[in-house]
Structures are given as structure tokens and as C-alpha cells.
Length: 400
Image (cartoon, rainbow, N blue to C red; front, side, top):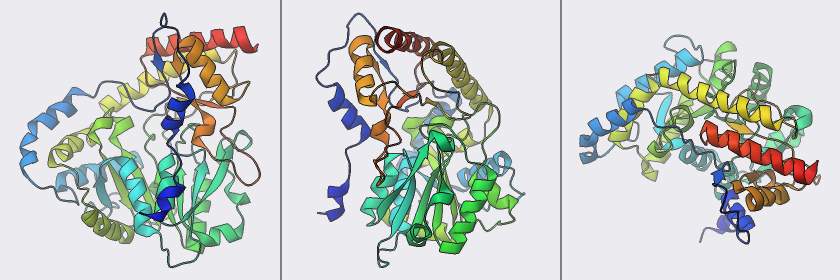
């Protein structure tokens, strides 16, 4: 057996199921699940139509590199969305379609980590998407956690990272907009990290799957900052995007990776052997999804309505603010986060995710997820308002 398997942690939702296993929620209250970031808005009809119209593709083996039309539409979207110079993204060398960002975020570590070098490190924000950690461990590297605390606007303090850590770093995972806080990196921070990547020769993997769910300003992307710096080779830089959140199509398992052509060439080699090519049917539906923005605007507005409704009810009783992007709320709670999650389920039939399940305790004894909960605003507006009212009631009756 792979010896690294023993280092994997249980997934957050396994922990959550165990946390709730001895509790019986009130049957008089309808269940509301705010724990998992699975979009519940309907997948747009034009995407499902394109999928069904392309069913003949099931009779063909897919090409790992993806169709020309899909890669062209992705390139056009990238250049328009992130204000990249015309023709700066070559669909033939800068882009690979993938079966959702989860698959790609895992696979990139297996591609780029060099275990012939002693003690390779993979740096990641803490809290984090657990795929980053698992990818690092199974690639034979050690995760190094960068605490994202309220004192630094829920972003890591990259300038506090010791030089010796950067020297061992082979891969840096970023998440902007962040899961779970929804905060975004600014151009200065991106530029600083690009400078460090050049100095210490590591790769930046920027997970931008929440980039289209924002409040006022579209979040910056890593390639956008590269272009601003005149780095149109995008050296050492990769971005990961998905249709799951942008287009309410999590079951489509469709996304892409884009960036440094040399890394993309090796990543294509890895994925060819991995056998993870996207179905031609899914490719056809994905191509039309990336070419349309109207459905994205409607989707974004629906989430903002839920943010406004929930915050109006919860801000008087819980410490939180509206994030600039994403679809999560990340409130601080008055007691241990697991205790609070149990109380909500036992008394209100609401399922939330304890923040400590998304993070690790670092050497200084800090777990940045403790006494936070993650609320995924994926339920309907009516259900989100109802959940907020129930949480408000719990706060009034038990903690205020």
C-alpha cells in the first residue's frame, strides 16, 4: 500500500457525520443543510440542452487535451474576464480542460513535486480545501499551513513566512476568493508571491473557482497580475477555474487549468497516463457555458440577495461581515464551534460545518478555524432566511 495513505485526515463531512451521529433533530422543523458548498441553483437550460445534443460523443474516446472549440472558448473567456492582452492566451499551449478543479488541484501536486529533493514542502492557507493537503501528502511532500486569521483579513501573512520555508517550498496553493472567508488577494500580494516564486523556484497554483461570485468588484486573478507585470509567459503560475459554482453545474465535473506552457506540457503528459480525459459530451456543454455571461450575472445576483437577507438577521447577534466574494459566511461563534454546530442541529435541524474541521492546529497551538462556522448559502432564499431566523433564536436563548 502507498505508505502516505496513513497520513490522510478524515474528510470534513465524515467528521461532521460523526459529530451528529448521536443527535435527533426536531422532526417539527424542516432540515436545512448549509454545510456543503454544493450549488443548488438550477443548471441553465442551454447547458443541459447542449449536453443532450452532444450525446453522440459518448461513442468516441475523448482527447485528453480537449476539443479546439472548448479551449478557444476558455481562452476567450480568460482574456475578456481578466483583461489579458489579445492573443496572450494560446489555446494550444496554455490551457487544459479538466474534470473539475478538485481533480486538477490534486493531480498538479503529483506532477510537479520532486521527491528527489529532501523535505519538499507544499504551502497552503489554513483553513483550506482539504484536497490541497491530501495532494501534498500523497505526492510525498509535507504540508505547511499558513494561518489566515481575522487580524490579517483572513488571508495568510506571507511576509511572516521564514526564508527557510520558502527555500523548501515546491508548490504554493492559493485560494482567492478564499474558502471559507470569501476574502480576495490584491495585486500587491500576488506580485510579491510571484517574486518569491522566481527567487525560490516554486510553482503557484491559484484556485479561483469562486471568482465569478462577487459583490461589487470582480476579483483579480493570478494571470491578470502576471500580465500587469509584463509576464506573458505566466512562468511558474497556474490558475484553476470551474463551471460548478459559476454555472451551477457541479455534476458536470468541468473546469480548466491555464498558465505556464512548460508546466502545462508536463501536466498533459501526466494526465494522459492518468486517463482522466473529459467526455466529448461534457466538452460540448462546457464550451457553450464558457461563452455565456448572462446566466452568471443572474447567479451572482441570487447569491447577493441571500447574503443581504441573512446578514440583516444574523449581524445583530453574531460577529461577521459580508465577504467580497464567494458564497460562504464565516461567523465567529461564542463557544466551541463543534458545540455550536451540535446545538444548531439538535435544536433547529440546521447543519453547518465547524470551522475547525477545515483547518489544522499549527506549531504555535493556533487553529484558525476554531470558534468559527461555515455557512454555505446554497439553499433557496426562503430556506436561508429561515435558517438565519433559527440561528438568531439559538443565540438569543442560549448565548446572549
